[in-house]
Image (cartoon, rainbow, N blue to C red; front, side):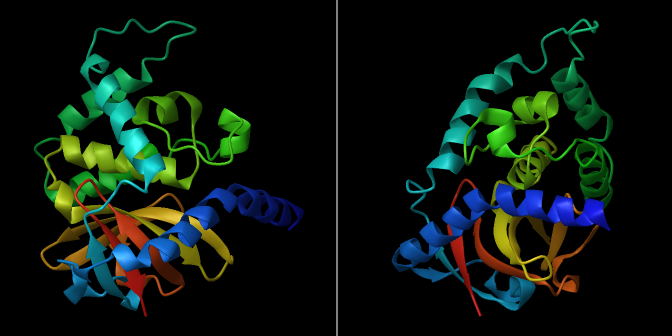
Length: 226
């Protein structure tokens, strides 16, 4: 059990940045103006208030801007070598290979594919308390929970999932007592969870120890209450 205690201490250190995001979301609560489109689902049993004002979520918007710059180069020819593993090209080829699969299968395959990468803390990876990595950065350097979620978000966007139905959710893990980030996809009135801690894609509300604070995509963010 020594390894478990060490892992928990390390995860708590890595979660400090997400805790800061949670505090910021609470301060921004006044910007949330109305019920969210998916409020009827009550993600993890909560109600939602939505705002389209994203300017305060600079880590998120900066990551999106960096990805806009990187995306045109993702499908360039890449020659594998001892120092170049062509991770980005392999990822895009993988997405093309599953493009015609049913949506549930696509979600499962994306979750499995990206969960193979290692969990690495931002202070170790980037010498920063909090950094939201693009898929290329994640694929070459590994990352922490929001980096898994961001790469899954982008993957599903490439597969044609509507961006307004896909959200990164920042939450509290009540079992481990640490902040965490996951991806949730709304489909046919149900929220599905893509989590780097869970191998299978499952209905989000089957997980009872997650308490969401806020969720976000490119159109809006939602404050979760209850």
